[in-house]
Amino acid sequence: MKNGKSKLVLVTGGAGFLGSHLCDALLSEGAHVVAVDNFLTGRKQNLRHLEREPRFDLIDSDIIRPLPARLRSKRTKFDQIFNLACAASPPHYQADPEHTMLTSVVGTHNLLTFAEATGARFFLASTSEIYGDPEVHPQTESYWGNVNPTGPRACYDEGKRAAETLTFDFERSGRAEVRVARIFNTYGPRMRADDGRVVSNVICQALAGDDITVYGDGSQTRSFCYVSDLIDGFMRLMAYDGVLPGPVNLGNPVELTVGDLANRVLSMTGSSSRIVRRPLPVDDPRRRRPDITRARQLLGWNPATPLESGLKATIAWFSEEQKSESKFTRTPAALDGAIPLS
Image 1 (cartoon, one colour):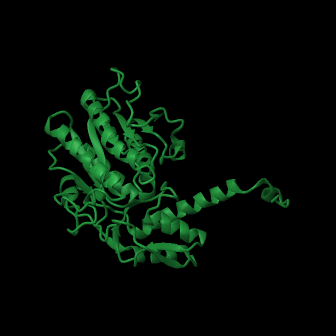
Image 2: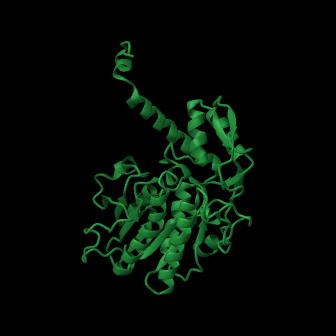
Image 3: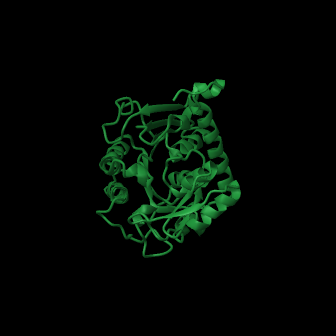
């Protein structure tokens, strides 16, 4: 609440995995939320439970285009703008690399200009990918990164680096009050089955009894943060009223190998799937673990969900998703017991 009134909050990418959870958290605190999404990777079903919520609005729009007139009305004054709009998994952001880059650069500029006009505090969802294949471990916010600027991941990595540049340029010139979160691997319910990232891949393959694909020898490491913990970090960072020294890492500092993750999921699902090896993708990071000292000291934030608990909830969610999909994809012939036509 602000001066006895509900805060008006804009969430771009609001139908995505993280965006939909953020909308839920904001609404639970009494905010009025306007979500914007172009539905390239976001899904309306992530927000279906909010269809009758009077404090929630959903707009189909792309942030690389001018913002809809209803948002730019002089009577509409947003208190906060969360920019989560960008495909975040390699298969999705590499499918249209030009659009990915424009989303990070043109889209972020559009929203920063809007934040300046409306007086809203601006939040950029950046990424640990700005560290590239890091030569410093664990990664602190002061590390400049090791990114291949011409590789297949550059549209995302360099796009987010440029988005951070724009964001801090607006802050330095006094044009906007900004917050920047560098997000490390996050998982949980509402991830897409075709997300292409390791947690969703391994769980979906194990549940289906398919071979589990591990790229490289499985010794590369990641640090996995459960979605509710990350959203708590978002809320704390946006609410922080002190002077920030720059971006803030948000992620779980517990590091494990991809091979270990695959074995844990196999054990938890009771799957008989085999682990098969595939070549490591170009520029895939060998190690990834956040130093979250800044988040702990400034925000009092620390991820609280153990990996086993988070994986259990995520496995249960994907299991229900697969049951729903199989129910609705059966042919009419299979439903009534008749012999299907060839």
